[in-house]
Length: 180
Ligand SMILES: Nc1ncnc2c1ncn2[C@@H]1O[C@H](COP(=O)(O)OP(=O)(O)OP(=O)(O)O)[C@@H](O)[C@H]1O
Ligand SMILES: [Mg+2]
Image (cartoon, rainbow, N blue to C red; front, side, top):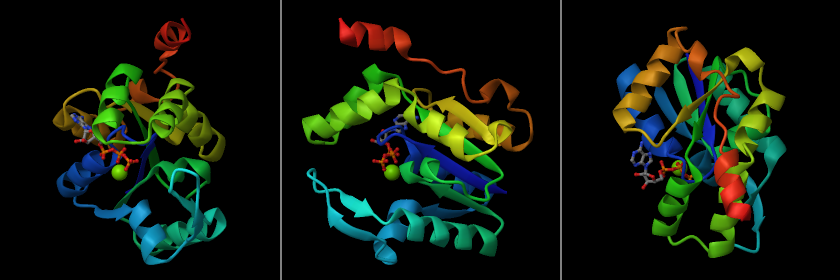
């Protein structure tokens, strides 16, 4: 099983991937750690975030996937390019809850707003659907308890996750409110 967990920052990829790795006995690959370890970045943006070398990162992640079968790879950049994954799970969090989680992290306000907007516009889902086969892309609402999300991913991995196929989650009501 080669599982990709992606989603906007703050949607709970890392905590969920850690739980899934333990439960499903998969090797955990954190994409942010790969970027640092292999020095796959050049310079920083206006928020101080690393500017990642996307081509080299994609090649390195593909190499890791080709080398080992049982792994879970997590990171927001995984939605940006195709990888030889069996399943892609996009973590989704309602804007209200995401705003709370991001504010607790002391993100720069502008950066938090960008991430919130990305979530409201289904950014990671749209990117994943553009880069991976449609039938392999699923979405889960990480506003639930971690254990429940882990069970949902296990169901998806067993082929019983039809109701989690991407396209079901829609925050447009929240977006309307945000726009006043
Ligand atoms: N299902 C959940 N229930 C309660 N809290 C959660 C849940 N998922 C995530 N959180 C909390 O939300 C915060 C963000 O989670 P996490 O660091 O896993 O996000 P991330 O998607 O990996 O973010 P980044 O892309 O910045 O690494 C953490 O404080 C985490 O404990
Ligand atoms: Mg993380």
